[in-house]
Structures are given as structure tokens and as C-alpha cells.
Image 1 (tube, rainbow, N blue to C red):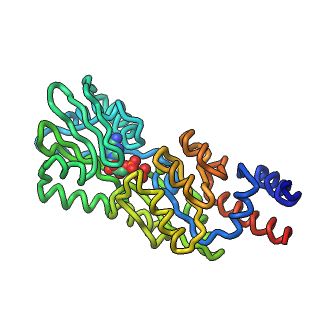
Image 2 (image 1 turned 45 degrees about the horizontal axis):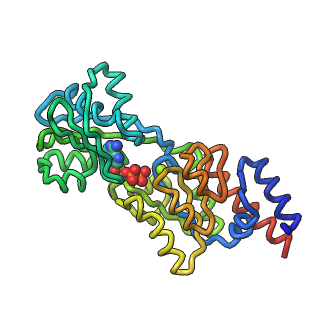
Image 3 (image 1 turned 135 degrees about the horizontal axis):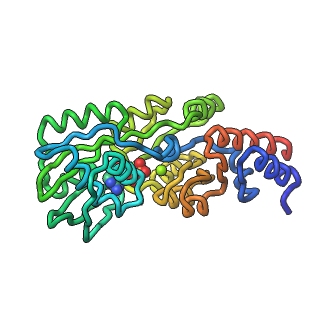
Length: 292
Ligand code: ADP
Ligand code: MG
């Protein structure tokens, strides 16, 4: 039977906005040594906006129009930012066909007879699309500002950059500082590129960053830490995060995250507030000290 203290702890968690799915999660939370955070939608709000439009060989409106035609088929937060910007700019969004998603890299579709590719640099490299040197330095500068540079190619040629920025959740920095204060190792894991990831990590006070991680590799990174003897919590919101949430000793899902992430979590942060993850760990320590 569940010890009374655990039951009480679960009830106390609920009052704090922390849904603790099972007593075991509360028991293991006390032993945690490391916390891994997903970036987009976890550390950041996950509602990014287009901040810069840098076309190459076409006008801004045309670049936005081609990009939105492809991205309107995608549910990715970056895609939603592109479509929203096209709407607010009032550009026409042509029809597209043969939409394809390349997980963790980009998307493509045929627009007005031309194949349009949108994604990160490795994605364009795979298609052997050359990026001119002036665009490369612009990309690096945007990434150093913590922005994600989404690259667009049309009919086999580089067509421009859409820079997209997400804002940090208001309590992210405080939560990271608190976790470090109570002795935990904090890591960021993201599919985004290293420059952008490092810029965000610097802002929130995370030193250990794993960037360019493909969706299926997130769980492997969790396991690697476990094999080094760490007891690991993974905090995430996305479909991509479900295997890592399941692999972690304690999976902590963001309440407004995708259904799959929530189902994979042992603990759910109802208010989306990372400070509540710290509260859950502290609660666990308190409850377990009472049982021993
Ligand atoms: P994260 O781990 O930050 O949630 P993802 O694994 O979903 O990121 O995606 C990794 C990278 O792949 C993005 O930063 C982006 O460069 C590229 N990408 C993925 N989907 C899209 C899309 N629909 N449009 C543009 N770029 C995309
Ligand atoms: Mg995410």
C-alpha cells in the first residue's frame, strides 16, 4: 500500500499545480541528480514570431508567400510563426502539393510548379543548395541573438532567411538558478542549431548544451546520463520529447504540451511554470525524509 505520506504529498502537489501521476515519481524525485530541459516550448514560451525577413534574389513578399505556402501544412511552432507573419503582412499564400516533413530538419512542398525547401542548414546541405557567404554570416549573427534562422530554397536555389525568435517564460531563469542551488546538474537539449541554443542557454544560465539533436536521439541522451550514474529528470512538451520523458527516471511534462508528452510524463506541470518543477522536487525531499 502507498504510505500515507506519499498520498499526502500527491495531494500537496495538486495544490501547488503539480500533477503527480504515481507515488513512485514522488519517491524517485528525491534522488534526482540531473535535470534535462527541452528548449522550445519548455524553457521558451513556444510561441515564436518572425523577426527578420532576408530574401535572396526575390522580394520580401515573395519569400514570405512561398514559405507560408509550404508551412501552412505543418504544425511546427516555426511554421505557425511563418504563416501568422504572412497573414499580418497580407501576402497571398498560394496552394501547395506533395508536402513532406523531415523530422527535426525541415519541410518541403511544390508551390506553383517549383519545389520549395524550408529548414535548417544541414537540411539545405542535403539537397546541395549553396548558401552565399553573405547569407552565412547573416545567419550566424541572427543565431548569436538567440534567433532560429529558417532557410528557404526554391527551384534548387537559396531564396532567403526567415529569422524566428521565441521568448523565455518569465520564471525560466529563476527555476534554473533554484535547481543549481539545490545541487542538480542542468542540461539543455534541442533540435535547434548550436549557436541559437548556446545564446539561449547563456541567457538562462545553462552551461551544458546538446544542440542539433534529432527527435529520436533525445532519449539516447537521457540514457547516456543514466549510464554515468545520474538519476535524471527530463522536462519537455513536444511529440519529440515523449521517448525521453519515458526513458527518464522522472518525466516532467509541460501542462500545455502535446497530448503524447503529457501521457508520457510521471509529473505534469499544470501551470507550465518551471518553478513548479523545483517545488515538486523539494516536496519529494520533504515527504521522503518524513518516511525514513
Ligand atoms: P526543437 O527540439 O527545438 O523543438 P525540432 O526538433 O522540432 O526542434 O526541429 C529542429 C530544427 O529543424 C528546427 O530548429 C528547424 O531548424 C528545423 N525545422 C523543423 N521543422 C521545421 C519547419 N516546419 N519549418 C522550418 N524548419 C523546421
Ligand atoms: Mg519543445
